[in-house]
Image (tube, rainbow, N blue to C red; front, side, top):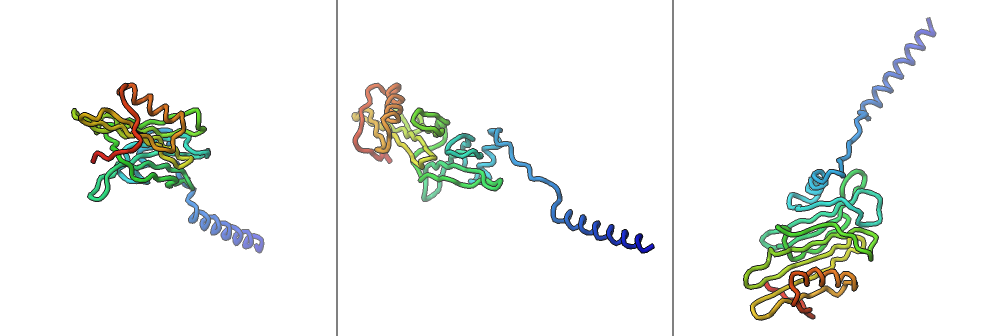
Length: 204
């Protein structure tokens, strides 16, 4: 009779422990988003940065084996206008900002944005070109950037033209020879007579 009471007591204690543990851990594991799905990548970038995000690409942008997402945002307010580039990384199952560029001239509307791999770099880079968005019949400008998230560098090329001035190309001074050649050869395909400019201009 005593042994039955002891057994009953032990079962009650075990039941209480099981119920107590169950209340702290529901057993439901958080399911991570499918970062191999481009639509999911874009939505997760918007969840982190806001609805102004216009593109988001998963890639290998820094020497890290975790999830890395490059994203771009267009900012248009009373005080600010332009574009920003970000790198998001996954920490504790949550996307966080690893890098944020300064506000750059340009628009993501009708622009070309893609991942690129250059021989000089182990990591992937983001290439941006505003194309003909800022061009008109009387001239205009093209903004082009290469974003190196590993070195937190923005490489810049600015093509501009106007009546009687011809077509000129300015390059930032942080470019390697290979990146300079890349920008120049890209623009010369469309503007064979372009000349190099030693100073940048602001057409605003």
